[in-house]
Image (cartoon, rainbow, N blue to C red; front, side, top):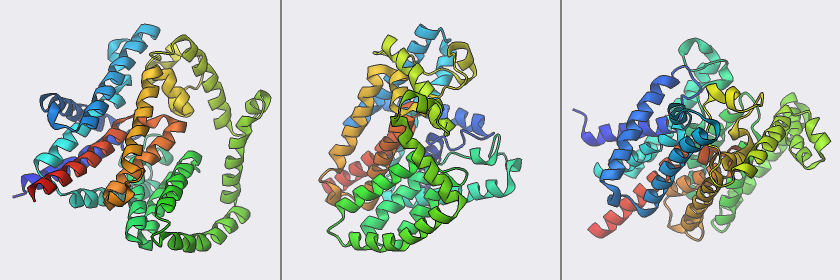
Length: 401
């Protein structure tokens, strides 16, 4: 018979996959969305009944997430007349943060070893990786895509595994971990080169290099750079893929040019973001305190007079547009959480704790462009729950000795 601890471990991994909205862009989304709403409700009930047993900062993030959820429903109803039901549907990505409290509760209650959690996370990231390969080979016949293969499964969980392997590389100093990290991370670019994702990953890599420069890791990094640099240069100079990447990067710098150049930019994604930003800024001037909330996708045409408008396109501007000052404060609070646990404390962290914090850094950097830790904060809060669970287990172990 399977033990309760084993069942709890499996549930924890399932909750993480659901919290990352892995199936959001697939035809299976409605089923998994329903499960997420139920488990999140259970998580919030546990949060209320066992409030004082949760770490202080996890409690604070929980309260702020609930406040953001309620604010979004109120604001969209108040400023656009969106129904409360539609407000709940539109803001469901905020509500599923409840899963984070259930994850923390299960790990502590059933004394799930964190090494076991880590192995399950990395193994599952490979399962999602191979599922993506299957999708690209077979296409829409297996229910994992909606319109086309590039929309198959969200890659947050794979990126989580990639960043954990990156932390393992710096902690354990084995090239295999760097290779695993790069291989998993490559899934973001199978269909199209994603600029902000690459920049966030490189930033994490450079910060880890800076912190581990006195531990011979810098030598490994130099060796890797000497091997990869010629390969990357050759690809960039002689292939269509390389030329496409170079062109997409060059477009970024055009946003600093005058308005006319922005509107005629060959990169349509930057042009669209420019118009979206203009619209959002005008709205922010009218509703700077609370923002206007999240609008249900099926009702955007009714309330927003733009052919194309997604707050995830305009990053922090979109966060301020939706959540006002409260959203800006929560983003600052997220950065504060990272700095207090990372700066000058790297040597105290286990390899998995380092991976969790670096993934928080990765998410916060991406948020500048996508607003992800505010528009869909479950991913962030799950990492906080995992990190705090690890710290709690350490304290329990130390007190028992």
